[in-house]
Amino acid sequence: MYSEKNVNNEVSRFEALLEHASVGIVEMNEKGEITEVNAFALRMFACNKEDVINKRIEVLIPSRFHHKHVHHRQEYLEHPHNRPMGIGMDLFGVKKDGTEFPVEVSLSSYIHSGHRYVIAFINDITVRKHAEEEIKKLNDGLEQAVVQRTTELTEAIQQLELSKEELSKLLEREKELNELKSRFVSMASHEFRTPLSTILSSAYLLNKVKIIEDESRREAHLNRIISSVKMLTDILNDFLSVGKIEEGKIYVRITEFNLPVFVADALDELKNNLKNGQEIIYNHTGEDLAELDSVLVKHIIMNLVSNASKFSPEDAPIEIVTHNGSNTISLSVKDHGIGIPAEDQKHLMERFFRGSNVSNIQGTGLGLHIVARYSELMNGSISCISEVNEGTEIVITFNKI
Image (cartoon, rainbow, N blue to C red; front, side, top):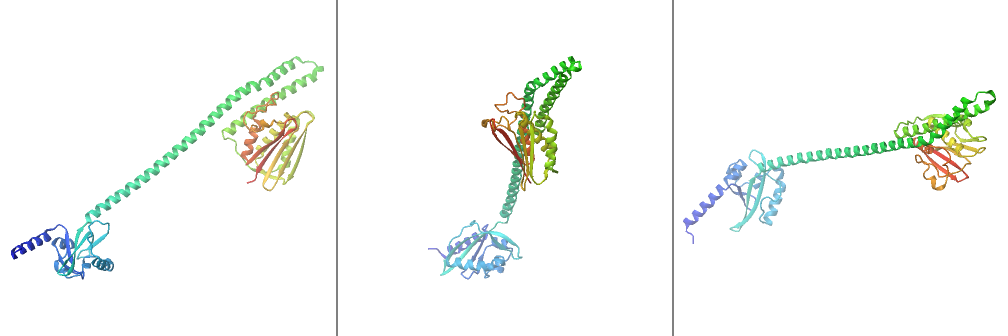
């Protein structure tokens, strides 16, 4: 059994432990009144012992939390349990002068002489919170920097992809232009040979024709020269048109004009280029005024009519129909010539493509390709209706914007 001296020694040692602990210790009774507080806690809350002894524990808590804390305190006393520090609750203490500071609290309870007491171990975590805030700010800054850098890198990658795509397009266009040049050289060497030979031989024979009685022969040679020069001009114009289209140098200029009058004038220019006995029959329905690029429309008409004449026999009619409706403008050119094989029709709009049944008729295979591209530039589409030896009808439909 302990003697009174031993008991006093134990009390002294307990009081020394309480006073020298490096954590705030506050004891309260069942009424929530502070019954004991150590020196560390008094320094923490910047108060004297008489400021808190026998006062409710809420004196150490900011007033805005009093109502909730009383409820929590009563609930804890009804169901006491040990609660360690660091359970993730944001708690605050208040000093005598009203200064608030963040704390971390652990609770334990015991019964003495039939009464329950609660001991609170309190740590001031201001430094830690400040460090956490600094770390949070640093992390937020790093996250923002990462997000910004990621955005910049994404944009840079997108720009690289776009540049790569643009470069790819440019390389593809360059490849097409080189192919066009190569095909031009090949085509020119073939297509130019005949008209140039004709021009040379006719010029030579003209030089030999000197008497008036040979005037008819002189006229025939001149006509052959004119026809050959026109053929060369048409070939060159086709290549120039394709080159401009591929380089994006064809600009659409929409104007309002009288469609039937315009078409009639264009057809009048073409009459002298038709074969013997060929006749153009033109019909228009709908409104007269149209909004299109008249220059491109004229190229389309002249190209289609020239094709119709070229691939039709003498004395065959060429039928032209225009219609200006509420939503579309259509232009069709129909001949009664050799027609186009079904297997060739799907390739008609391709560059340099020529039907399998026209090998004996001169041409570059660029005409319908140019017509199709000009039509696309004016929001139009092209279709073909044809049967071998029954003729061909080319229909172009422009959608009104």
